[in-house]
Image (cartoon, rainbow, N blue to C red; front, side, top):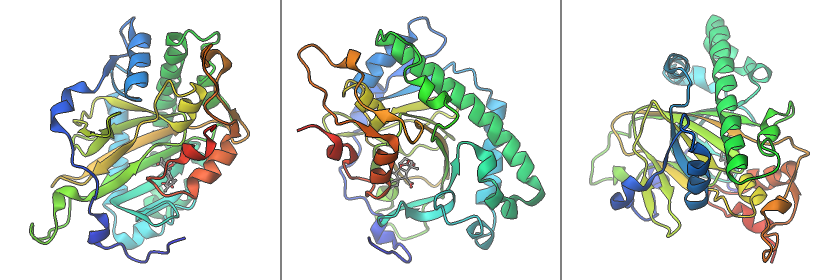
Length: 332
Ligand code: GA4
């Protein structure tokens, strides 16, 4: 394990290929109020593993309330924020991501998606306002979980599976191991352009999400980039009124590779701060994850070995961000 004290700016410079500006228009948009949304979703998941959702029905008022609570937290003095850390397993983190030496130009709060259990750490920071934070967070989590489950049901319908709750029941389960993350990307540091190529500063390095589905909302500062099948990177224009959905590794496995777990990253390329809130819908720890038999074609084999979410999570959390985590679970 690499132990890092203070990440230097040089460690945050990206060594990956720059973004492909020509493909901006390709990002699929799903209108949740359309009767055809299940087909749009299935196509997007097969082609990209990523799509934008409009007409989602979640109130902007609720979203803005949570964003302003989060902003209040990230604007607090450093010593106060540090009291809510480290993010192990839940709490405040600053530049260090995971346990394997990854760093990024980001501050974050990692929370259990059942907020009552870990909000205590934040009480020292929010003081008497912690109740407001918890209340808003609870309402937000209830709404995004409902939307995420609705989308998972549309996926199951679009795939013509027998039971439409085959994916959503994993998030609905009381023991669902879901996580919530608030990421704050401060404006990039004030350095000479020739000293450092600030356009290439890593906010959050390339990775796939281990869970089933991720539901992201950000403010109007761009930075999110997704990798296409050909390996090129596409910048996702920010839209503070929309949500963005990622297929996670576990859903890729359950669909025997039909849905793609999308590689993505965030660059800190702006003078403006970026704030994103992401709900990572995961199954219960003891849940067995394997390709659904109805999704293994007649001429096909199962591409993955069965594993429990506990096993996969343990393996994922000891990996580095850019590792191919599913590689260990592929059948030869
Ligand atoms: C990526 C998705 C979620 O943000 C997260 C991340 C987790 C962490 O920040 O601790 C991981 C990363 C994420 C995958 C690989 C491991 C674990 C950092 C890391 C290097 C909370 C998650 O579930 O997996």
